[in-house]
Length: 373
Image 1 (cartoon, rainbow, N blue to C red):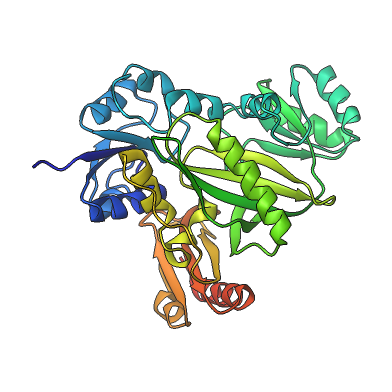
Image 2: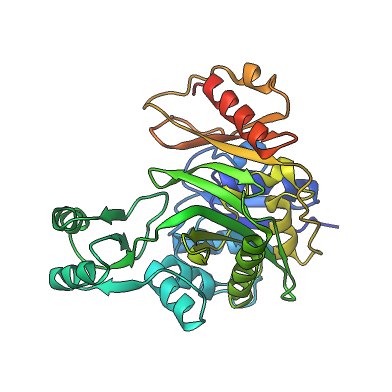
């Protein structure tokens, strides 16, 4: 019998980490990615070379696939909408909703899901009005094509506001009141074809330059906050159409309230710890969810810390220190096969398991110090 084919739009590191469990589960994998010999192709995926926004290439991928998913949401959704008979997950409607971060916020508000105050910005006068309404402290965001800090500007003065508006040079913007948070949290929530939901543990994330750099699993929070965060994330995902993993990013504010920051309709950086810390990884669970298989156990088996390996220079990859890092107890190093290295480019990640989350994070950070890429 021919193997079923999983089609993935995007063949970067997430596509790579989806390909590996898909093959183990007995699927063939085909990815669409513009980079020759992309990370997913290096671990057994067939590759269609082309843009994620090329409707003809997307159609080719879908025609070759039994199940279709994404590793990146910045794609041509219109091309997906032509294929009503194919299981495309998450649904094109959900991808379209999440592509526009302002529409995300409206969706959250309409569904009584807690999030920061926000307002559309349609002119300089409106920007100034909102800045004053939010107490002189807000974040200005591009509605679309914003990720890993791109398209976000913190505004704490009128000079900041002027610079931010000049940088964006046009509108298609909205503003959010800056949340005074204790910490940032995230929950990976899996949903299958039948609407069954299974969440991974709540984790604590640390961002620098708006990029996730560290993840603590479990989060260092009370059981009450964990229940609040999980419930909020699951209520959100239940209202979204389609199957798969959804990465829900959250704030825990100074009043002990959990608010939704934003949603990713896919596997997520803050879930990489699951590869070593849970009974099932987020990547295997996503493949199960989008292919009609039963969702697997998401239990955390041991405290696990994740540290990203970000590029620190521009140029060819010159890898050093990986073998030394792997000698640290409980440390696993995952490299993505990307080249060249660039400042803040995600080149890999480190997971470390230990008896306590503090020990795990110390070991992960020590491993990171040893690695140069």
